[in-house]
Length: 131
Image (tube, rainbow, N blue to C red; front, side, top):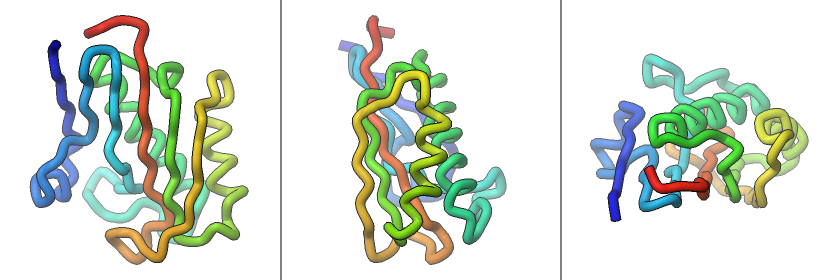
């Protein structure tokens, strides 16, 4: 069975030793994805909706790199630092997955890798065929 990996270039990937996403057969697992901008900084500090949207954009790119798209996503997990802002995070999730909503979980965590990050998202996908 073929295993494929994709990397986003985020500095944490090499420091921690992981890939952005991995495809094993027709399953794709996307690592925890934080709201990082093109330069490696925190995207849209303080804006829950924008940060969530950025996470989903990075996830979408990883899926595309592995021959899939968001319609293949079957589960997401959102780790947020302030659950009282659930509606802002949820709105971004709904906008991104409105056509094919996956199962999801949102959990409040004490903190993320950078204090300005409000959300980190994992995703699992199942594709109709092997790559």
